[in-house]
Length: 270
Image (cartoon, rainbow, N blue to C red; front, side, top):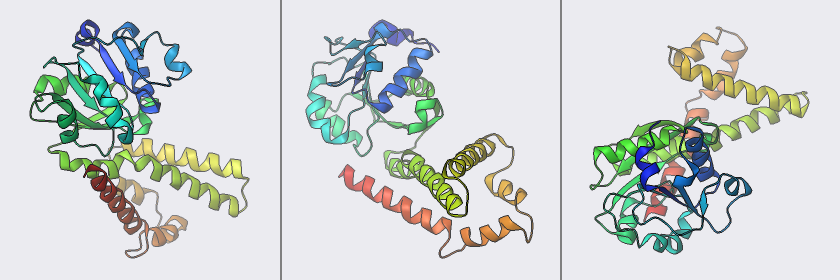
């Protein structure tokens, strides 16, 4: 991965919690020099302190990228830290859910290059999925740079418009929690059916992880993969009668959950 531009001008991270640390780990592992990174965080973790990056030091005047990774409720206090960065070439990248591009334009200036992203927590193991969308000032080279950065922790997709971000949050940003809850549910019921809790959890976790990998790498779609494992009149078919019920099955339940998630995203953006 080519980090020449960032190495020359620097990368500033406003906030470096779990998501920021996951991305930083990916970048350092891909060849970015620790001396090219400035972290602004009141309580950096021991791991961050051990990486050799600049911590709460004087910031470069015109960094290549500023990553904004603080929680939405902390934006008002954190963004003034960036007021002195006036270079038109600096790309401001947000990873905060619920904060629209317009909020950054108001705080930083309408002429700034701002890219909003939505990564998810599997980025911590290099298996994340990140959606990106830039404002009107964002050029193709800017998006290419952000895509390069986010590719260090997984896949990257580009959106056509910012309004799609609400669906992205419901589909991938918040969705790891749905999967974790599915693992919990399978393990809980497995234990209720007589398995030792740790064995039930191991079976549930391994099955979900394996099925996800198969779905990602197989030439067939998930519908055909489901059919492949379902023998007519067999045990899986009986389970799917419940899960695929049009009224009370998994799809209407997931639909309700995702709609609630997207609605909350829209509320937070107002």
